Length: 85
Ligand SMILES: [Zn+2]
Image 1 (cartoon, rainbow, N blue to C red):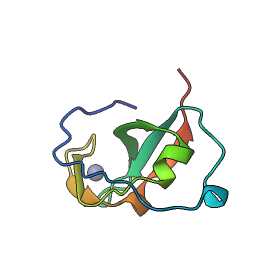
Image 2: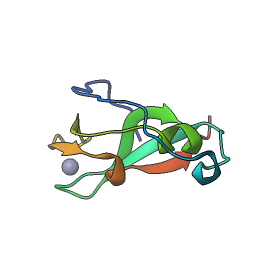
Image 3: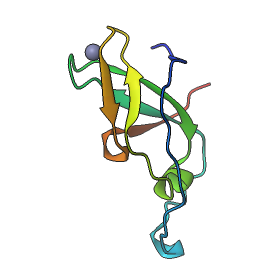
């Protein structure tokens, strides 16, 4: 998989989440997206961890998949995968 740097929009703001509900995992993860057009999985260009991601708002994140489809994604569209590097 390749990381694409042509990220257009990233809106991020803190979200109120109680401490008990936060994931304990702070290891680096890659946020993976599944293209809404062709279904291919690709890196969304975000390096985060489950704990930080839980308090992040992502709306209208526009990115192009490796096959060239441009779509807009929200937080719920991301899957966190433990970084391997
Ligand atoms: Zn695609």
